[in-house]
Image (cartoon, rainbow, N blue to C red; front, top):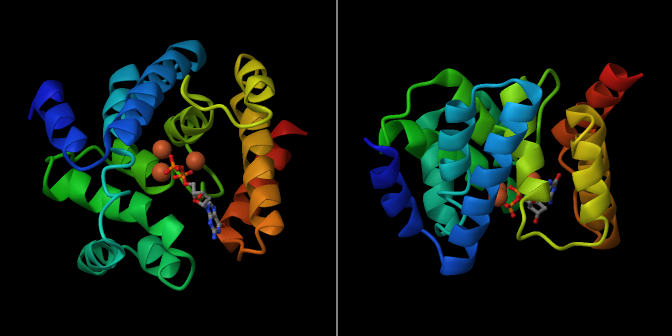
Length: 189
Ligand code: DGI
Ligand code: FE
Ligand code: FE
Ligand code: FE
């Protein structure tokens, strides 16, 4: 499947605003890949597909995770549904889009939670999701600034924001995100 064909199919899966976000993540992912020396085309395809399942009914997301059978995906079913779309997305990227590159698939799979030992490509897509040009949460400009210097420092700041938000909202925290943050801090210091 060509990039243009993939874009047309992904666009149909989501409202216009989420497609604009996706294009922003593509732009930021490619820029980060060039800045930090990763494969820009792997970053592009992972970014195009990263939120493909975000607007699916949650039961369809759950079914995709069950069909996939990936242990990390199955684990998220015990936690909040906001975590599911990345694993469902990795499954459909392979099944429906024919993406068979393991690095790109893992960049989709771990874009929400991260994981300890994230690859450079995983860090890039996860960070691009925070800093794409359409995002405007408090602190995003500081994150963009940090992103010029260090993937790890910027990602810690990004996850810190997510964790603070989850605590403020009284929500459960997915343990893998905490492990990811600890691992990134170890890489920095
Ligand atoms: O899909 P996006 O909105 O572009 O971004 P994302 O895939 O990073 O998803 C962010 C959402 O997931 C956001 O609403 C916060 C939520 N989230 C991330 N980590 C956790 C979480 N929700 C819960 N309950 N627990 C987590 O650990
Ligand atoms: Fe997402
Ligand atoms: Fe994110
Ligand atoms: Fe996203």
